[in-house]
Length: 500
Image 1 (cartoon, rainbow, N blue to C red):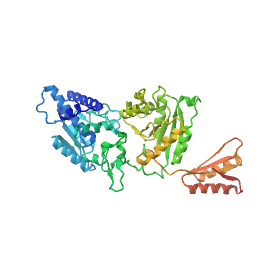
Image 2 (cartoon, helix red, strand yellow):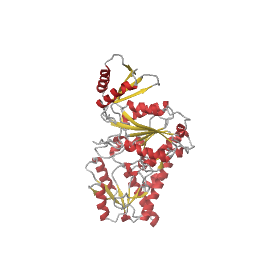
Image 3 (cartoon, rainbow, N blue to C red):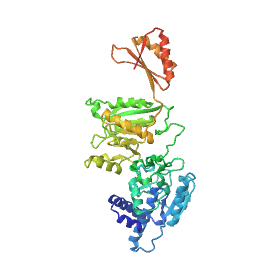
Image 4 (cartoon, rainbow, N blue to C red):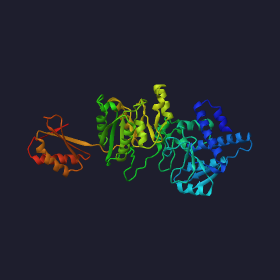
């Protein structure tokens, strides 16, 4: 069998390990179920293309072990399911049908929605297990194992995931090593293909040449596989999204809120002063975000999980720092995972990155990330990638200089993809006055009623110092109007002085 031969002759030890593990899963499934009881979901993408050829090799090896003969194994009898969509790329459809003809696939074409079509298919056929090209990091991978029963509410079948632990690099290593055909879109810069409405070539593969028409390098040249979904266009809904993304377009007229969480017993003990929280609040305000709350938590998984779960439900983003690393007190990632109901799982690409960065040591523990919801935000200026889990960003900064660098990188990454939404920034004015609290209390209370869209607050820098009145909002004209109204309430000149 050409696939097994190509892998056997390869010098890529990692690929051999991945291949052997996937083949084991496939052979195990074929031992548990008859050939009539299994099916294969094929969508023409790179992952399902890899799975097709793994299944061909696995079936060949399974039958060879059973019969001790190579004869009569040219056909691939596994039922193949293809959900044909009107929004699919023509190239995907064309590749799927060409592949089916080449390998004589028993193609079941379903034109209904996924769930209804699957219910009808399973009702008409004795299918008990379906091979899927799901990989860790895919939206549907959360909570799945190599053998996972279907979700509640779906027709009962076993999901078999032979390439669950494969990385983007592993997929392309297999395709190029085995020299199998793949959809032509991948040669045009597409790295993760959805529908024609939500997929564009990956900007990271754009060829910079002003003398030629826009051109992209092929998908297998993407240097960082964590960015394979950078070519997926984020959908913008009319309502408030639970996990909003910040992309190339600003959301100027939205009021976006964040919570800032610090994790560390050393802060609560007073051993270390938390300077990051104040700096982060200023940075968020500078891009138009409102910080609803800051919190300092113990190094306790349940405390982190409860706070993260509470804040992710009521805020657009949560920023958390401290407690990240291999020590027993570093519980932040475990708390985030528990908040979203997932496990910590090894991230092989992150582990490889850490191996180059810090050598051996405790890299395995540090490479345990929340399963299926983690996106690594890698930037050439960052010594360690930032971690994004749904609407939680885990910062690794330990001082304000490192935070400045991470924030700068977040800003640059926002321009390339969707990381942090930028809204209309706040503008503010500050007045100082020597009037007493009693004298300004009633006029300011009335002013707050007249200008509910403006934040109007007071504070003193010292007990005997002047009162500082702060006006903050997104409409400069409204702020100027409120300041003028306050001046008019007192009439005297020099009662209020402008300050920075």
